[in-house]
Length: 272
Image (cartoon, rainbow, N blue to C red):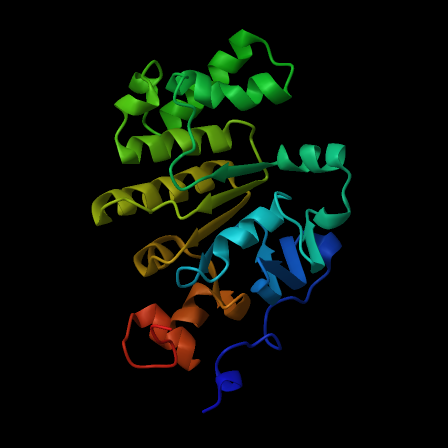
C-alpha cells in the first residue's frame, strides 16, 4: 500500500451542490498555508454543511487551529479560497471581514475570558462593542445566554473563581450572545475529564437544537465525535482524508479513517 492509497480522498468529498442553495455554510477549495516555511494546510478541500454539527477530527499538529484562523480571517491562505456564507474571505475588505465575523461565534480552548471582567461583562462585551442595544436589552440577552449554559448564578463571579468546565460554558455563552449563524469550537474538550466533556457535548447539542445554525467542533477526541458529530471531516497533514455523515465515516473502509476512529495502534498512522 502506498501513502496515496489512504491519505487523501478528494474525489469523493461532498463538495458538490449549488453554493447559492444554502447547502454549505463554508467551502474551502485547494487551500494552502505555510508557516515558517512549513506546509500546514496542503491543498485542503472541504465543505461544511449548513444547520448541522460538523466535527473536524485529526491528530495534534495537523492544522486544525490554522484552519479555524483562516476561516475567520485571522490568517489568510497563501493560495486557494475559503467561502463563508457566499463571501470569499481572502478578498474581503476589513469592514466586510469585521461584519462577517459578527456572524461567527468562536469558543476558544480556554474560554479566552478577560480576567479583569466579571462573567456577565465578558459575555456582554461583544454586544457593547458591536451593537447599539441598550444596557437593559444587553442585560436581558446576557442573562438568557448564561441561563442557557447553567451559569445564571455565576454572572458576578470573576473568571478566576470558575472551574475549567465553567469557563468553557462562559465562553460558550459569549460565543452565542451575538446570535451567530456559525459557531466554531476550538478543542472544546481540552483539559476536561470525560464526564465534563460528555456534559459539554450535551450542552452543544442542546444549544444547537434551540438556536440551529452551523456548528463546527474541532477536536481529536473520538468520544466527542461519536457523541455529537452529524458530519465528520478527518484532517491529516493539512488535507482532508475523508468526509461524510457520521454513519459513513464510522463504517469507512479507508485504513487511515478506520485506524484513527477506532484508536488502533496498527495502521498507516504512526508516531511520526
